[in-house]
Image (tube, rainbow, N blue to C red; front, side, top):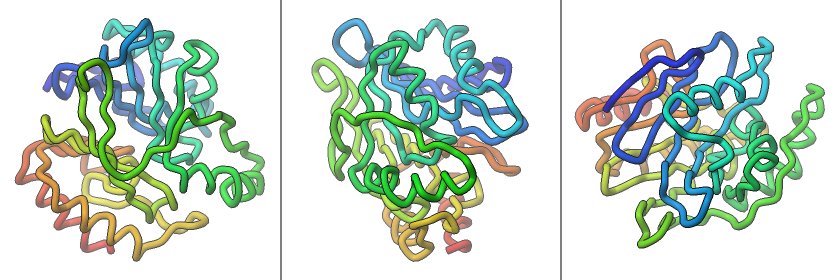
Length: 246
């Protein structure tokens, strides 16, 4: 696992073929994960949660992500697929920018897309915020998601409602890596006071995820305790700790 600070992001190479860009700015923005060189064709990269374009502190989050990726030798123009763990703007606002640059496809769960187009749109309009506009190529469902030629990366998709109605988490069994979005953080959990949030559903989601064999937990945001949880024992302790919140 290699870490390198790059402006407003800390770039962490978790394993060969997977980089995590951990947000380091003052304002709100999510961590992003990049599966590199997995898809067929000229756009081989897969990005999980591209984040904000610009946040509440006017930090140009997307421009910083482009620069951080560039320092690792990757271009936004080469992203072929965007996976959204959920559709809160701090995770998916930059979808449109990437689609404009690369023509990337977008995917998320059907439950989350329904939320985005109904209650989510109404909720954010109250704060004069616009829900991101994009057209999913397909919907994520519980089960396997194989990426690339010869199924180079074989992921497991877990529907994990609670923070939002259609949140998903991505598990890479081969590398024992779990990408949790805003379901589980380092020592904390995602909030449930937004529309369609549910503490009871979040508890059930966390209970399921805690049964997985995980050696690296990658959350959607950092907390005061930290960001990426490394090591099987530390991941187990983190699940034990976050269960106290639910």
